[in-house]
Length: 429
Image (cartoon, rainbow, N blue to C red; front, side, top):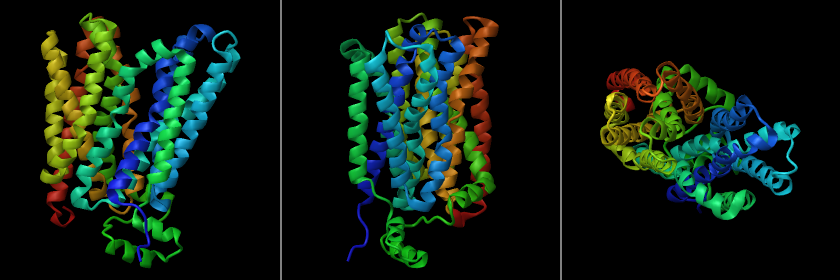
C-alpha cells in the first residue's frame, strides 16, 4: 500500500506557486511605501529603511528556514512563512483602510516597519521551496525542475512591476491592498492543499525509524537524504568550501538580478532620458527575461553540467555588462541588458543544480546560505553603482556596470575551481 502522498510534478507546481505568491505582499509594499513619506513626514533615511528592511529580513530568513527543511521537509517552513506574510499583509491592509491618509501619524512608523518585515517573510519562501523540490527529484532531473521553479516563480517581480501602476490607478491604494491580500490568501490555500514533502519526510512523520524510512523512500525513487538537525545542516554546509564558492557566484547572479531590477528604471530614465513608463517596461523586460531563461538554463545544466553552464552564463554576463559600461547607444545597451539577463538567469539555474551535487547531505542548510547571503548582493550592489554617479555625474550611470564586470570575472574563477575539483572526483558527477 502506498505510504506517501503527492508526486514530484505536483510538489513542483505547489512550491513554485508558493514562491511566486510569497512576493505578493512585499511587491505592493515596496512600490507604495513612498506614499507614506509625506503623510508621516519621513526623512530619506526613514523611507529607505521602510523599503529595505523587509526585503533584507526576508533574504536573511532564507538561511534558517531552508535548513529547517532538512528536519521536517519543506511544507511546514513554507506554510509558516506564507502565514507570517499574510499577517503582515493583513495588518498593512487594515492600516491603509482605517487610517490612510488623514489619520496616519509618525508614531505609527515602527508598526509599519514591523508589518513590512512580516510581509517580507514571503521573500524567504524561495529557499525552503528549492530544498523541497531538490528532495523530490533525482539528480539527473534537478536542473530542469529547479529551472522551472526559479524561472516561473521568479516572474513575480516583473509581473508585479507591470500591473501595479494600473491596479493603483484603477483601484486606489486601499482596494489594491485588499486585492493583493486575496491573491496571497488564495495562493497560500492552494499550496496548503497541494504542497507535499518528499517521501522520506512523510514516512518520518508516520513515526518510522530513519533507516526504514530511507529504505522505503529509496524504493519510491528518492535519491537525496538529509543528515542531522537544522543546526547540523547549517554547520555541515558551512564547513564545505563549495557552499561559499556558490555564495560568491550567487551574489553576482541573483544579487545582481535583484540589484538591477531596482536600478535599471533609474538608469534608463536618467542616462538615456526615456520616459518613466518606458524605463519601467525596459526594467520589467530584464526581470522577466532573466526569470524565464532559468527554465532552459536548468535543462542546459542537466545536459552539460552545472559548472560548464555557469562559465557560459558568466561569459554572457561579462560581455553584456561591458557593453552597458562603454556603450552610449540605446540599442547596444538594450542588447547588453538582454545578455546580462541571460547570464544571470542561466547562472542562477546552474547554481542550484550544483548545490545538491556538492553538498548532498545538507541541501537545506547549503540552499539557505547560498540563497540568503547571495541575495544580499541586491542590497550592496546598488549603493556601489550609485557611487559612480556621485563621483562622475551622469556618465556614472553607465560606468557603474563595471562593478558587475569585475564581480562576474571573480565568479568565473570560482566556477572554474568548482569544475576542476569535480573533474578530479568523477564519482560525484
